[in-house]
Length: 435
Image 1: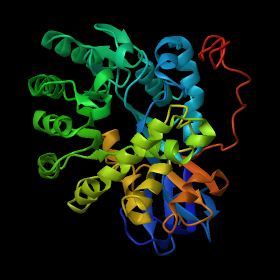
Image 2: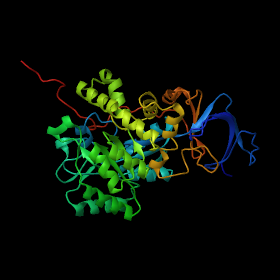
Image 3: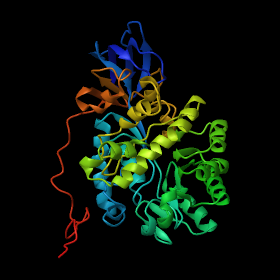
Image 4: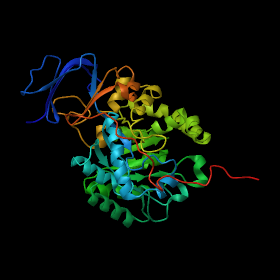
């Protein structure tokens, strides 16, 4: 007999931006079969009935920018040179459970160490381990001048999450290889940090012709393309080339904005990393230079992003989870908070960005909304996130998580005893011994 659950008397936040209402939800197997303000008669015998009077129910969060294979590195050095493929896959499985227990029922793993993302997605879909639904990219395509790791990027080959492409033939070959392996997205690092030009921010590292070739190659095989873009030229050329989603999108100009509006391309600002570094720089002993750069990035881009939002550009919430600044299971809600505090969205608008809109990163239209026929990925909370989205960051207020109609065990997994040998950077000292 299939799963049958009746959730009664909850205040329903459906993910569309509509005003919350008191109602009832019938779940059978993995689907929502009925949502009503009126009493619902159970469709099956032995239906489990749960009274949620005084509670709030909403779609599970969807994180549209996550890095499940990284395991919270403090530097690119650690990420590129202190990770092993098999161990990364095992640890990613435990981190996926943390993400799920925090209320994230789906996430987009934008790029991956080795092939960990594809393999983890398939293991979760097969029921081998428990975790959120996943959509995955492979190794991000970069040029030797691209990425955000400067001279750590090799002139050719692969390192960390990146695959360096040096010619048009290599672009085509790498995209076809990744699609053969089973990626859901192709990711391109369109802009990067060139060491002696970092004062100008990230520079465009791909030509328009190269971007067109990449998009055409992926689209011919039915796979969308997402771009890491910081800078007006990067955004504009990515949109002209046919890119399907933009990560970051900072310093976009009016021409880029018009293209984004006309093409209705979703934007994932991913300000959580910057916001955490700004808010907790002293606690993390972070660089003041980085704090100042990121604070300026948010401030400089609020007016253009607000203009984009008001023009109807779909905004998606992504947290950049996976780094020491954004550990797993803790900060997935923070982008909603930034959207409210910095961009001036209402809590309901921010919730839509983190649920209904963010389903676009998953390439699915059956999640992210509470409605008949949708998958039953749900959160039950003891306080109202439609008034204060920070509620979503308090795990004590998350009472239940349903994934595909089944309640998730929220008891935390045992904590890691220690990091594996060689996993973190080891050093002789933190300072130079001066006489």
